Amino acid sequence: MRNKNRTVKFLCIYELVYLLIIIVFITSCGKLGDPDTIKIARIDNEYITRGDLYKILREMDDKERPKISNRGDYLRVLNQYIDQRIKIPLGKKLAEEGKITLDREVAREHFFRQSGDEEQQLRDIWAMPIPEGDTITPLMQVYNLTPATLRAMKEYIEQETDKIYEKLLGEQAIAHLVAEDVKAGNIKVTKEELEREYNLKKDNFHIYERIKFRGIFVPTSVPQASKIASEYRKEIDNGKDFDSLIKEILSQKDSLLALPELNQVKIIESEIENNPNSARFRGFWSVAENAQPNDILGPVYLPEFRRLAQDEKGNPRAEIMPDSYVVLKVLEREPERTPTIDEVKHLLAPPILIAKKMEELRALHQVEIYEENLPDPSSSGDQFTNPWEEL
Image 1 (spheres, rainbow, N blue to C red):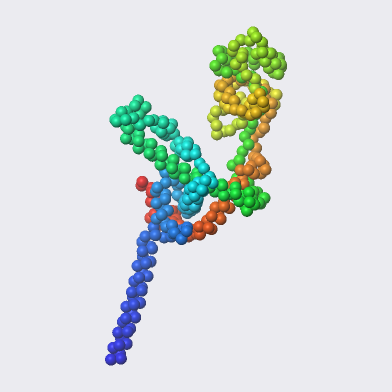
Image 2: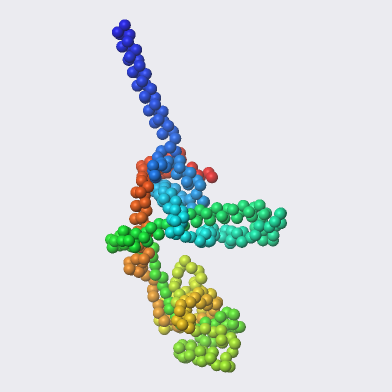
């Protein structure tokens, strides 16, 4: 009888151990069989899984979704998502408290500007009134719209504006907190931090080649503008001093007998930088390349541009210079160079301060990231390398 009880007891223990093994096996298989459930981060006691990360990528706008080549790409997406989880509620909170404000039209303008080739079309659609009934206006026909599709497009613009508005409000909230901390002396940028940031980013900063000049501007609206400008250059080539020519032109403009077209000729000082990312002044720089002070250039065509001028009281004001043919004298030339740390300090400091504030807020929200659990897209065995690829 005693042996029988011992046998029963042994069988019960065996069954218990077997059951535990099965539970562990099932749990392990569940993790191996469903990588989506693997935890990759935590914020406010809420875990973020691989599946959440894939969902974030799938729902991203096509223009924003990055190419994922390695774990670092996943990490950047994850960090951006976590930062938005912190910033957006903070922006709403500070806005409700009246500490920050943001014009919604600023967000809409951001949306239009980042729309690429569709920018003008979206602007036109937003400006269109929705007609009553089934009426289709000529402009709606241009974009093949019905009242229903026009309404849907306007709703789409509103939704995208909402997203940008939330993000901008969040950015403004962080800037507000940083400004308060700086004012209170609770946060600052050290010399070593500035130097480190400068060494990392100095190749991204450029002071472009710049020419300061004094020019005789003959607007293209003046009849035979090109010929008039050429005559001015001819006088200089024949020996007339540039400054003497300008005095002569100014005295003629003041004359009661001045021709109407002469009144439109302008004598101004201005400067233009040689920014390779702008095609606007390429024609000018094809002529001004390697020019030195006191060189005479032109006539050269200059498209319309905006410059800072002064009114009669010496106050700064914006002045639009029309399309013109210009004969000019180079006053100063500054070659392209890398700016010094002092020249870009105002650009280097804000990102450092914001990073410090975000680090503080992440600690407050108990953010943890488990980099070892991030998926590895370079692994051929990773069946989840590009889960959004077929979308």
